[in-house]
Amino acid sequence: MIKCLKERFKSNYQADPVVIAAAPGRVEVIGNHTDYNQGPVIGAAIDRGVLVALRRVDESVFRFSSAGSSVFEISDSSQRQRGEASWLNYPLGVYNALIQRGLKPSGGFEMSVESDVPSGAGLSSSAALELATGKAFSEAYGLAIGSDELAAVGREAENEFVGVPCGILDQGVSACGKAGHLVHIDCRELKFSTIPLGDDFSIWIFNTHKKHSLVESMYSQRHDECRQAVEQLKSTGLDIEYLADVTTEEFESNKEILDTVISKRAEHVIYEIDRVKRVQALLAEGKPIGVGKLLSESHASSRDLFENSVEELDYLVRILESMPDVVGARLTGGGFGGAAMALAGEAFTETYAESVASAYRGYFGESPQVIRCRIADGARVLELASL
Ligand code: GLA
Image (tube, rainbow, N blue to C red):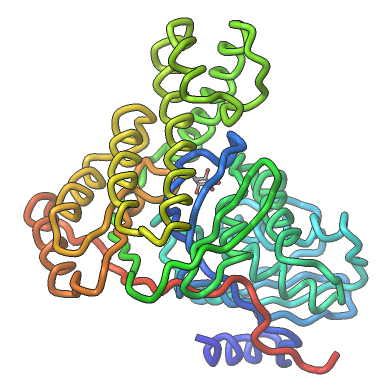
């Protein structure tokens, strides 16, 4: 991938890049829609990601290229892009967020991007792009910026420039991932830590290629419903700001005042936060097998309460749970299509994965994309020419 990137950079810009940075996609292990409710979440960085090659230029022009597209050239880096150029909003959003943090925007830059994260699979190709660009910019502009802050920069780009009201999960995991470890994020305190998982487990992705046509507005709608749940619960006298402030007991004693749909959304988030804490405790005790039941409960809650699953994901999870050495399975990421993940031991092999795919094909008439992921490191610089 890096060779392709360098060749394309050279052929597009007749020069070599000064820096090449990489950032991984991510799997949400547990903590579904907990991040923007200020709860905890656990994810893993995967061995698929985005590479960014960059060099600064003197003229005030910004050029972008990616596999299979011609070079996009713009002169105003503060302008949001549309249509085919809308992917530029990710690097532009990061550039603008870094300007707030000390990047001196003299001249312009040339950038090339290469990715092997399937888009639309819920594996956060966009966060990988944000973090790889963030790393490349920090090197090229000499900014001393740590992983935690780079995650915040990526989220700011996504929230403010791209316009998606996501939490910190995707960018946090892509920034702070570590091979063989899960990433735990305390989304209220913005504290990132890693939990060893060991080498006995793999994460398998089954990408349905299905995506609800209204996926972005459905995500925002869930976001709003969680805010409404807070407002309605406040009217009972609870002193809260986010759903993460509500214990399961408080929810049970006050839930009758909530509208039916709002109550389902709140129940999902409040119990999901509890499940993340239990997963964290089990992992700390060295009992990863116990996690499986909580992953299954998380999926059932997405399906029945948060209503962000789809038939294809329910089917995959059901079959995966019956397979040998599958610890647990659930939808991963925002939902409304995308991918299911399974945490599995070594006895769950390619042959079993193929039998899951073939059952799915028999039922839905199309094959899911199957990806076995190793847990990988977070955003990093791969090559740096002397500046
Ligand atoms: C998407 C968002 C994340 C998170 C998940 C759901 O991946 O980008 O911030 O909210 O959905 O948990």
